[in-house]
Image 1 (cartoon, one colour):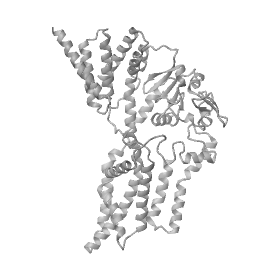
Image 2 (cartoon, rainbow, N blue to C red):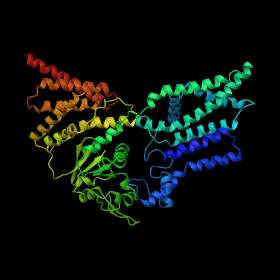
Image 3 (cartoon, rainbow, N blue to C red):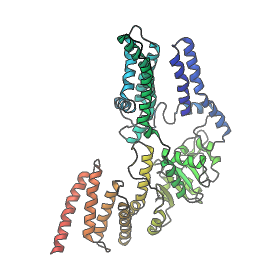
Length: 514
């Protein structure tokens, strides 16, 4: 539907630029605007035929169409559901900062000049300037009011920035009006008409400068990060598996590869969030022939709704699909803990595998199974934090830590025998050491986790590890963590622990010297 919005803008703008806003021009604007929305007419047809293997909503009824058109499931005129965003003033200030970054000073100055010229008696295109200035102000204020995302988070800032492209386009149009106005005023002051060629030269230079300054950022012809992310996830799961998707990144990337590129036709992709909507299973269940659904809608509380729909929880979904291996990517819906009755989550790269609690965890087997699961060669931290590429890269790097993290947490369980604890701590320590020293740059939390694992192995007093080496490693990696993670609320406690560990190391060395 983004093409619909772009098409509408493309059709409306030329009419506004070439005509004053007469009644006929307004009628044409309305006609062009309506023509831009024509793709929406296809939705009821597609929904009725129900041939699409993935869709959003049921548009066969007027209510369903309006629900989709107004984005009611995410909140009409809101960017996200159940999000508390930044203040209106913060978003407006960030928009101005973004405009200074995206547009050259000349473009901004010309847009301002177009508005200054409204005060002149012989002003040109006053209706046009008022129209676009009004569009800019109304759009900016309305968007800042409804953009309920916390822009202090880089990814959310990146999402919000994409909506500022429309207001930046309006500023560029105003600059286009301001340039001839500036040339006209210069001709009048200098009493000459020889600056006409300067107008075209300036316009050409402005365009060339924008292309020169932004081309390298906009050129994504060699960017296959999300492509590789999805392919790695799909390749990692066994034949005929079920993947319960959660979130935009795994959901959209895996669906694209599976449905559009035809990768892994043997697996079944089921969206966790959408299973909670009443339209999802009636529309999509027939396109998931390998998956059994014990009802019409996912809900932690099982029963029959007034509409006649039968609800089911995740536990019964897993029970009825026991013949298949089931994975969650990425994370599992917190609203339904029923799966915990008879299932556990074991790490599977960026995803997790739902395993029956009757199966005993074998650390050696699981380490062998999940080690080097992905072919991921991207450097850590090389992408803009506001991009989805950065999110994908972070997920793939943190996937290397999930198995030692899981094993370490198992060792922390109080009910385990001491010999089992020692074995698990040793496995976690070895895995952490392997990944920490594999690459020079890696996530900061690896230092902290490895330092804690070293400390636990040190307290075991078992095995062949040198206590002095373990203490030194603990101190070194806690110190590295404090240097990289300045915002951790536990920094003060870590600093206290470091002082104690340094005293302990010195005491150990003194005893050895004696």
